[in-house]
Amino acid sequence: MRIFSGIQPTGRKHLGNYIGAIVQYVAGQDRGEAIYSIVDLHSLTVPFDPRELPQLVYDTAAILLAAGLDPERCILFRQSDVHEHTELTWLLTSVTAKGELERMTQYKDKSAKQRELSTAGLFLYPVLMAADVLAYRAHEVPVGEDQRQHVELMRDVAGRFNARFGETLVVPEAVIPQVGARIMDLQDPTSKMSTTSASAEGTVYVLDEPAQIERKFKRAVTDSGKGVHRAPDKPGIANLIEILAVVRGVDPAVVEHEHREAGYGDFKVAVAAAVVDYLAPVRERYNELRADEARLESIFAAGAERARALASVTLADVRAAMGVGSPR
Ligand code: TYM
Image 1 (cartoon, rainbow, N blue to C red):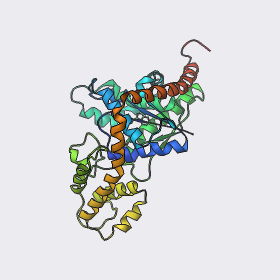
Image 2: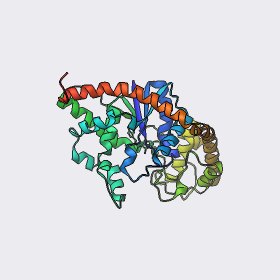
Image 3: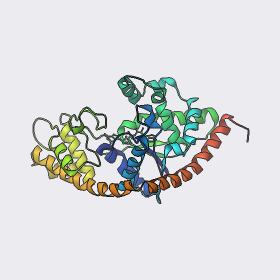
Image 4: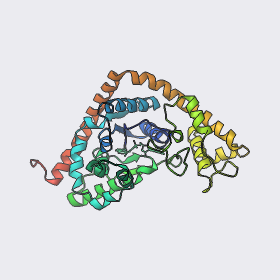
């Protein structure tokens, strides 16, 4: 069983990325052949700084390694090192409906926010994402809830390709965690936690200092009333319950039971303490791993070579199925 997922090197990685996705990447190493990519080409679809980009790629790699990715047990590579991704993107545009791309909520949200230039890259983003996964004939795609629509699209693209050109690609499945698939902003628990949210106070970064984490949780917006339990009118408390459940590796019902007598203030302190303990070892390992850029480059080089060996086989099959290039 093959697993593929990608993570963007834009901005700093936050607790939502960690709980929704990175934890699953680490677990994937024990479940199958795991392939993970730092998708630098995706980050060109919104404004970026060319001098900063290589640094952000290293930052992201060091976070993934600190979280427990082991280059001996998975393939970790930088997307732009494997040219098959961009070639397959173009080939897949021939079986991608423009109307489908227009319906992607992430495209609609992000393009509305671009003041100066809403790029064609932003529009084609989901096709590049489809190429990432389909190039490896991956079966599973671990992601957070916000990527569900993109995985649906790649399933359609793979199915349409196979129907038009013959069975060539694997139709992948999204793997979305039961708990923690959509971590919400601590200041606005009706929007997902993200790097681009209105207030930096609502986003807990993996590399935040303990004091910052404690402050953000203490100030977290909770709901009126009392009682630590999940309910539709309690998005703030429900979010904190989910965070604590994932961090402790227990069911949210256990968290509710244990804290049933607690006031919101005490509960927030407990969640903060658990998150601080959870992220402390990651931050420590990060500092060591991030310092050795030569080692990160050698991990990328080895990862790209292994990735290319797999992707080039798919590309040869796709080209042959489509009649592209010299006939075999
Ligand atoms: P990216 O880099 O924005 O996010 C990485 C992962 O974090 C998840 N995530 C969250 N999970 C829970 N709660 C949140 N608040 C939250 N915010 C983000 C995302 O769902 C994602 O799994 N398009 C992808 C990158 C990508 C990719 C791929 C993923 C490129 N190619 C191929 C899978 C397969 C993205 O923007 O992730």
